[in-house]
Amino acid sequence: MKGNNFVNLWIDFRKMRFIVIIFLICIVGFACVKRPTKSPVPTIEFIDFTSSKPNGIDAGSMILGYEDGDGDIFREKTTPPSPNLIMKFYYYNNGTHKFTGFFDTNISDTFNIAKMILQPGDGFKGKSIQGNIYIPMNEFRPADSIKIFKYVVFAVDEAGHNSNILTTPQFTVNY
Image (tube, rainbow, N blue to C red; front, top):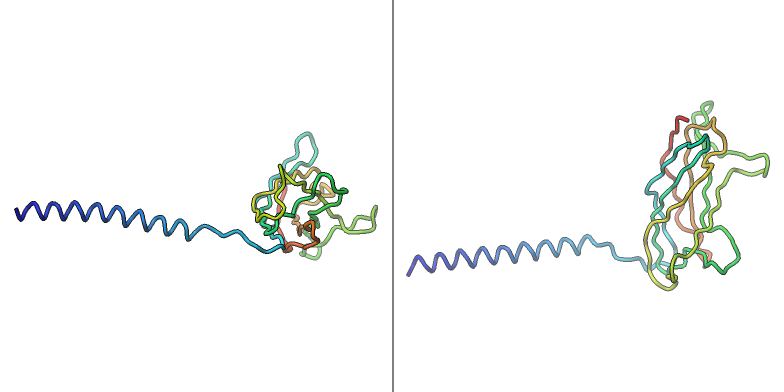
């Protein structure tokens, strides 16, 4: 009789251990989930940049992560076209050993890339959203002689809130 109690206790302990392990995994899993922001000011983060030169023409793409508490980081298709993602281009100056903004004499200003990121799907206004933005970038640098460069990026939402200012890592191309 004593032996049976020990076996039953051992089986109960093993069942209880399994339940405790499952419980702890659930607690850790829910603790790691990032809560969506409620801030109306969007935030962006750099995720990836790839580039190539097929047929002698620069081609690239950048991926940015975003989060917006009120869901108005994108432009509506019906609104007048105005850019909501501004990318300022900086190249490494070998003479000064510093990054410098590229001055474009054709427009008497620094070289900027302005993109309009449109609202995907049915819209998200009024909802906390997060995700990735894929940005195709043909001619991602103003001259082939520029080999080391980076971007400073910010977004402007429909309400006029500017996101954080993001500086990408430096990129080096050998073509």
